[in-house]
Length: 374
Image (tube, rainbow, N blue to C red; front, side):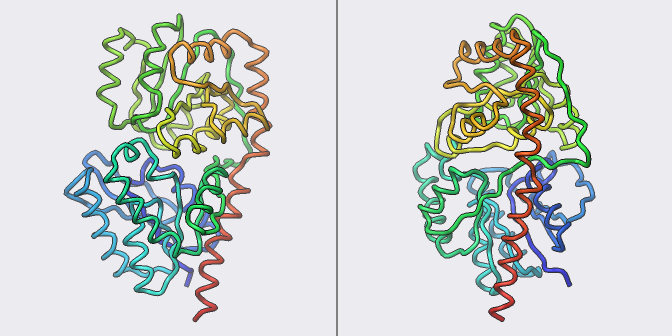
């Protein structure tokens, strides 16, 4: 019988490229994998994967009651289902995972996708931050296995919790032999943002930049808390013909859209350490599509750009700052072409095959240690 891993997330699974990648890799390396999430009112049917999937039907979509009911459902689900190790993704699913793992005598591995208490939705809510922070301070130091997505967070978490966090970056997976994309240099760019339309992503600033940009379009692939507000802003600024809201896209659809873009956008407000120390998966999605991007001058993006310049770094989200960065990529063909070439070189430096080995080793060690104890 294959060793079984249950992963727990609070999203609806369909659009979670990171967890699809992780679960696929572990399933391909001899594990039975089950990914657990929740079904939302607008969720579409799940597609067949090499791993198993399960979604809870819950009465609440968000807020305290959502987290309460999700955690209760997850706890009893874990008690009544076989597993050899639990992979808890972020703090919002950690409590039931930890309790179930202790009751069953199985290891719990913590996957810190972000600095949860430092995301914009939490950092300015003292009571919410205290609750999640207290939970993390209690449980994480008791865990032996943990990993995160950037070197900055790895160092911070290891020091904060006294646990040896490993690094497993969220890098795009090569699909067979890569037919590298060569985007066309143009002064009428397609600017692409992929991800949730939430606070702190620089989206309003980017829409405000569009009236200053003579040509080009802004494509937003995703939805989120600011969806309606951003659509109204585009109306108010009379740029609805140049700002395209693409909605949620499945991973395969998103790859095709990305290949059509000219410039990728990875914009973040400095509203907490989670964003400041982030290393977003879209960084590598843009690289693999061959498109230069605009990133923040935060530690991880600065480090990558020093090693291999794949984009323009900006200090702030002022529309004039963003306009200047766009113009740098749309008025100098030689510079743009050099960044495209650097993206191609990056495929050998940054690839999932390297990260996958670290990931598999973590779960093999967790399961092997339990076998030795028994």
